Length: 213
View 1: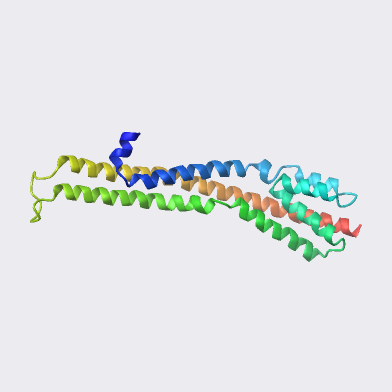
View 2: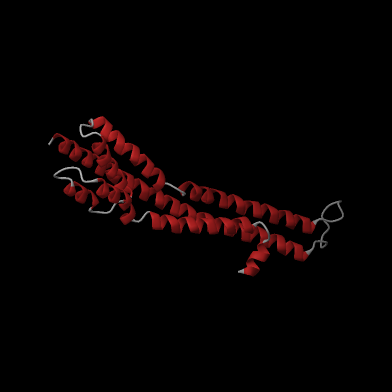
């Protein structure tokens, strides 16, 4: 691997940095976007069950908020009813939606950086290709009057070809997985947000019923 890096020249170092950052972002998003941390399957039903006879205490609400992203949204509904037992439907839904927007921002965190890496890596590879081509032309330069047949530097020519090919290949190797995982995480976040929107609507209707009881 070290020999490849040496053959690719200095243009490969930004690509290596992108690959390390991209891998770290992918691992972080995999850990942060687990279903148990975003939308635990039975959390909504448990929140409805525990509040059938009234809004639970602040300690239960705080525990719910720390449970997951969906828990934070549901907790905001409980807090709105705590603050005003006769809260209007519009105010209750506004509270849920406001927390939902904050949660959505957290779920989408770092996806922009991953998309940037997917877009920038091929360009960095292209930069390495151009630099390699410059090396190639430099190896064939004569005394300034034109190209001299057989007067090129074979070592410099081989080095220029290595820079061009290695950087092009490495740029694609970095960009393709970054693009795939960016699309995967975007799709996953969209699914989570839709599920949270449906859950929040159901929970709002439950709280409104509870308020009227």
